[in-house]
Image (cartoon, rainbow, N blue to C red):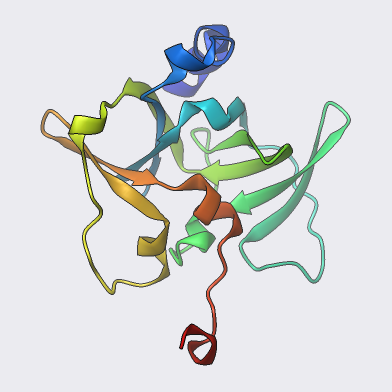
Length: 169
Protein backbone atom coordinates (compact mmCIF):
# COMPACT_ATOMS: atom_id res chain seq x y z
CA UNK A 1 0.00 0.00 0.00
CA UNK A 2 1.43 3.38 -0.98
CA UNK A 3 1.61 6.26 1.49
CA UNK A 4 -1.10 8.10 -0.46
CA UNK A 5 -3.39 5.04 -0.32
CA UNK A 6 -2.77 4.71 3.41
CA UNK A 7 -3.56 8.39 3.99
CA UNK A 8 -6.70 8.11 1.85
CA UNK A 9 -7.78 4.96 3.71
CA UNK A 10 -7.27 6.69 7.05
CA UNK A 11 -8.32 10.18 5.98
CA UNK A 12 -11.05 10.28 8.63
CA UNK A 13 -8.26 10.13 11.23
CA UNK A 14 -6.61 13.20 9.71
CA UNK A 15 -9.46 15.19 8.21
CA UNK A 16 -12.47 14.74 10.49
CA UNK A 17 -10.73 15.81 13.66
CA UNK A 18 -11.46 19.10 15.36
CA UNK A 19 -9.22 22.12 14.84
CA UNK A 20 -7.09 21.52 17.95
CA UNK A 21 -5.98 18.03 16.92
CA UNK A 22 -5.00 19.35 13.48
CA UNK A 23 -2.74 21.97 15.03
CA UNK A 24 0.92 21.42 14.12
CA UNK A 25 -0.07 18.64 11.67
CA UNK A 26 1.35 18.87 8.16
CA UNK A 27 0.92 16.91 4.95
CA UNK A 28 4.30 16.30 3.35
CA UNK A 29 4.87 15.65 -0.33
CA UNK A 30 7.73 15.36 -2.77
CA UNK A 31 8.68 17.35 -5.83
CA UNK A 32 11.85 15.87 -7.26
CA UNK A 33 14.19 15.11 -4.37
CA UNK A 34 12.84 17.79 -2.03
CA UNK A 35 10.11 17.37 0.58
CA UNK A 36 7.54 20.09 1.15
CA UNK A 37 4.80 20.50 3.73
CA UNK A 38 1.73 22.58 4.43
CA UNK A 39 -0.90 22.49 7.16
CA UNK A 40 -3.22 19.51 6.86
CA UNK A 41 -6.23 21.59 7.88
CA UNK A 42 -6.48 22.74 4.24
CA UNK A 43 -6.56 19.20 2.81
CA UNK A 44 -9.93 17.87 1.68
CA UNK A 45 -8.72 14.68 0.03
CA UNK A 46 -5.90 13.06 -1.90
CA UNK A 47 -6.69 11.43 -5.23
CA UNK A 48 -4.77 9.79 -8.02
CA UNK A 49 -4.19 11.69 -11.23
CA UNK A 50 -7.46 12.31 -13.11
CA UNK A 51 -8.36 13.35 -16.64
CA UNK A 52 -7.54 17.06 -16.74
CA UNK A 53 -9.41 19.29 -19.15
CA UNK A 54 -7.24 22.12 -20.44
CA UNK A 55 -8.72 25.60 -20.35
CA UNK A 56 -7.42 28.31 -22.71
CA UNK A 57 -6.13 31.69 -21.54
CA UNK A 58 -5.37 30.81 -17.92
CA UNK A 59 -2.18 31.14 -15.91
CA UNK A 60 0.56 28.81 -17.17
CA UNK A 61 0.82 26.92 -13.87
CA UNK A 62 -2.88 25.99 -13.92
CA UNK A 63 -2.98 22.66 -15.72
CA UNK A 64 -6.75 22.82 -16.26
CA UNK A 65 -9.85 21.56 -14.45
CA UNK A 66 -11.10 18.23 -13.18
CA UNK A 67 -14.62 16.99 -12.54
CA UNK A 68 -14.64 15.23 -9.18
CA UNK A 69 -18.04 13.78 -8.28
CA UNK A 70 -19.80 16.56 -10.17
CA UNK A 71 -17.71 19.41 -8.71
CA UNK A 72 -15.28 21.27 -10.97
CA UNK A 73 -11.85 22.06 -9.47
CA UNK A 74 -9.01 24.04 -11.03
CA UNK A 75 -5.76 22.08 -10.87
CA UNK A 76 -2.37 23.71 -10.20
CA UNK A 77 0.80 22.03 -11.48
CA UNK A 78 3.02 22.74 -8.45
CA UNK A 79 6.20 21.97 -10.45
CA UNK A 80 5.29 24.73 -12.93
CA UNK A 81 4.43 27.08 -10.08
CA UNK A 82 7.99 26.55 -8.81
CA UNK A 83 9.50 26.92 -12.30
CA UNK A 84 10.65 23.28 -12.16
CA UNK A 85 10.76 21.11 -15.28
CA UNK A 86 7.65 19.06 -15.96
CA UNK A 87 7.86 15.29 -15.70
CA UNK A 88 5.57 12.52 -16.90
CA UNK A 89 2.94 11.47 -14.39
CA UNK A 90 3.31 8.03 -12.86
CA UNK A 91 1.43 5.89 -10.34
CA UNK A 92 2.78 8.01 -7.47
CA UNK A 93 1.61 11.32 -8.92
CA UNK A 94 -1.26 12.68 -6.82
CA UNK A 95 -3.70 15.53 -6.72
CA UNK A 96 -4.06 17.02 -3.25
CA UNK A 97 -7.46 18.72 -3.09
CA UNK A 98 -7.35 21.67 -0.71
CA UNK A 99 -9.98 24.16 0.38
CA UNK A 100 -8.89 27.74 0.81
CA UNK A 101 -11.19 30.76 1.06
CA UNK A 102 -14.16 28.39 0.50
CA UNK A 103 -12.68 27.36 -2.86
CA UNK A 104 -11.50 23.87 -3.74
CA UNK A 105 -8.26 23.61 -5.71
CA UNK A 106 -6.23 20.58 -6.78
CA UNK A 107 -2.44 20.54 -6.42
CA UNK A 108 -0.50 18.10 -8.60
CA UNK A 109 2.56 16.76 -6.77
CA UNK A 110 5.07 14.01 -7.57
CA UNK A 111 4.26 11.94 -4.50
CA UNK A 112 2.50 12.31 -1.15
CA UNK A 113 4.88 11.38 1.67
CA UNK A 114 3.20 11.40 5.10
CA UNK A 115 1.34 13.36 7.74
CA UNK A 116 3.66 14.69 10.44
CA UNK A 117 3.43 16.68 13.61
CA UNK A 118 5.90 19.55 13.33
CA UNK A 119 6.03 21.75 16.40
CA UNK A 120 6.75 25.49 16.15
CA UNK A 121 10.12 24.96 17.90
CA UNK A 122 11.12 22.64 15.00
CA UNK A 123 10.50 25.35 12.41
CA UNK A 124 13.20 27.87 11.50
CA UNK A 125 12.59 31.05 9.51
CA UNK A 126 13.11 30.67 5.77
CA UNK A 127 16.58 31.47 4.48
CA UNK A 128 17.04 34.88 2.88
CA UNK A 129 17.82 34.10 -0.74
CA UNK A 130 17.33 35.53 -4.16
CA UNK A 131 16.79 32.05 -5.57
CA UNK A 132 13.68 33.13 -7.44
CA UNK A 133 9.95 32.90 -7.25
CA UNK A 134 9.91 29.55 -5.43
CA UNK A 135 11.40 31.06 -2.27
CA UNK A 136 8.55 33.53 -1.84
CA UNK A 137 6.21 30.61 -1.08
CA UNK A 138 8.38 29.34 1.80
CA UNK A 139 7.06 29.91 5.31
CA UNK A 140 9.91 28.17 7.13
CA UNK A 141 12.13 25.13 7.32
CA UNK A 142 10.91 22.19 9.40
CA UNK A 143 13.56 20.02 11.05
CA UNK A 144 12.48 16.51 11.94
CA UNK A 145 15.45 14.47 13.11
CA UNK A 146 17.97 14.65 10.29
CA UNK A 147 15.29 15.47 7.70
CA UNK A 148 14.37 18.89 6.39
CA UNK A 149 10.88 19.82 5.15
CA UNK A 150 10.28 23.03 3.24
CA UNK A 151 7.22 24.60 4.86
CA UNK A 152 4.95 26.31 2.34
CA UNK A 153 2.57 29.22 2.76
CA UNK A 154 -0.38 27.78 0.85
CA UNK A 155 -2.04 31.21 0.51
CA UNK A 156 1.00 32.59 -1.31
CA UNK A 157 1.40 29.40 -3.33
CA UNK A 158 -2.10 29.73 -4.73
CA UNK A 159 -2.74 33.45 -4.82
CA UNK A 160 0.50 35.48 -4.94
CA UNK A 161 1.53 36.86 -8.28
CA UNK A 162 4.93 38.27 -9.17
CA UNK A 163 4.75 42.00 -9.56
CA UNK A 164 6.62 43.60 -12.42
CA UNK A 165 9.79 45.36 -11.28
CA UNK A 166 8.27 48.84 -11.75
CA UNK A 167 5.39 48.08 -9.37
CA UNK A 168 7.73 46.92 -6.56
CA UNK A 169 9.08 50.42 -5.97
